[in-house]
Picture 1: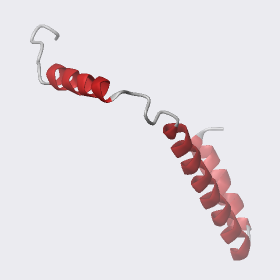
Picture 2 (picture 1 turned 60 degrees about the horizontal axis):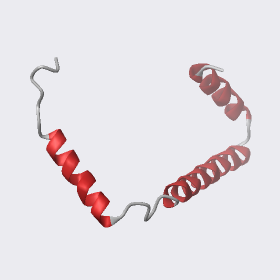
Picture 3 (picture 1 turned 90 degrees about the vertical axis):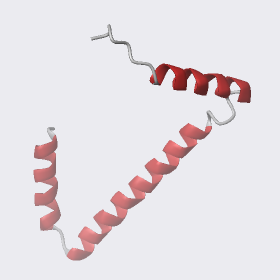
Length: 75
């Protein structure tokens, strides 16, 4: 379903609900967002501590050196 179609159908359906039902829908959507954020944090935390300090220094140096140079022949 295309995004515009989904939004239209969602809003049509939402408008058919009572205010109390609409509040339940909003509450449910917010709970889904919170759950998604928590899952994203957990996914990111699995990488915590994966790099050694020396490796991070080397990566930072390479980024600084590489990002500050302009290759005039690139274009």
